[in-house]
Image 1 (cartoon, rainbow, N blue to C red):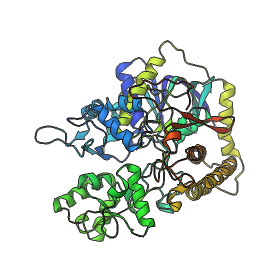
Image 2 (cartoon, one colour):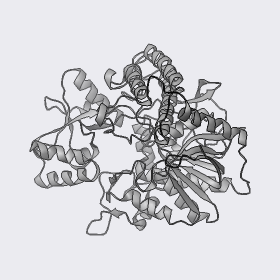
Image 3 (tube, rainbow, N blue to C red):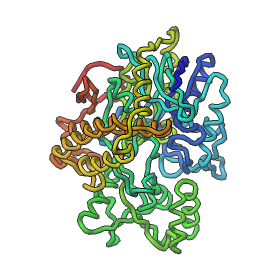
Image 4 (tube, one colour):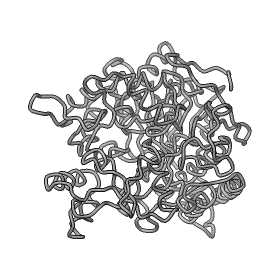
Length: 563
């Protein structure tokens, strides 16, 4: 591989929602600061907004205040959140929304010129071009360089201070050493850890982007960063087979969850995100399935509205209605849970950060789905965190020089990449190992197969098998740089799997049904477990750290105080 060294003030890894907004923020407030964005796809259609979105799910509507949003998110997560992160995010939700509108996003308005709300916290938008709008704004910035099709694989960290990162061009094959005064990681969460609803050719039809592999988590874990609340997995309640969103049905037309007997069961189990999934699982286990969202009897206007809404974000659901010859008003929509994901934008899993989004590695900041402690971010929350992390990173680098990454350190990571390209072909492929990993997680770490349930013995087996797969992955061979990216993605997922298993094992209670359903500890335990379950990789072993809950109104800076 050819090798090249690049230097910048701030490196942003991931050109999705947070990454783009972070770059916009730095350009506006610190125009002399050089920013480099590395994106493994292309920022025009990358990240969670690649295909568009039809609502902004986090907004402070008229008559409400930021603290209301904090209270809602805290209740949904059963108290295990970071109030400081939620509040600083919530205070920016409306500001970033208005900025998006100025950039060209169409937000629907009523006859009085006010935003059309959907529920207490949502706005309706025409968001099919939301990502190109952000990308065009970033590409126009004079102090920002965007490198598309560059896969960042590892951080460079010395004495717990970030120096930059390593990666390679998927098209060019150039190995990059990137020196930076600060790094913002905004790579999104982790999909593909578990066996998905739809196997084989259709396995990409899932709730979360299949190209979000947990890369940012894995790089941080390997470098000794502290992670938090990975055990609060996210399982989405979706339309069966199409894996289309259900919120549009529940909020848009007021569809209730009903079982095959027509009984409304959502009130029986509770209305938090995890309880909605849990109720559906239990109704099926107890023989009252299939479960549905009740749309029968809605108006022709509502039928038309749903067909259009799903065309914008999940066309397969609209096609399914048309193919069946029955509109939503004529048939209820069957629902199911997806496989589990790790995603800090919906639940609280991710990096352990201070109030300014700095991780436990000095100079490394996290924003969006990769940042922990702050659930229910959605699009606008990711933008808000991109701004918070960007401002903090820009202030951090003031007066600092670009750190040097030695040739000997580069040689370690370069030789690792070249080994996959030049080594002999093994008897197995990265695809086969990935399927094996998903089978292990599905069977032993609470996947769809076990109705999301697990026990300690199963988790121990899962860890043993994941370790075996990690060892086998060392012998993989890549025919191209594109295949090399797939090998690194598999490795990232395996690293995240190990940390996730350790977190599931450490929380010896069941606080979030389905999200963390521990059969050895089926009851909630507030006395011992109202704490954050954190972890850190130390000498190859995952060390669990339990930290006290951060109090209301507190500003948090990293310290060693444990629970």
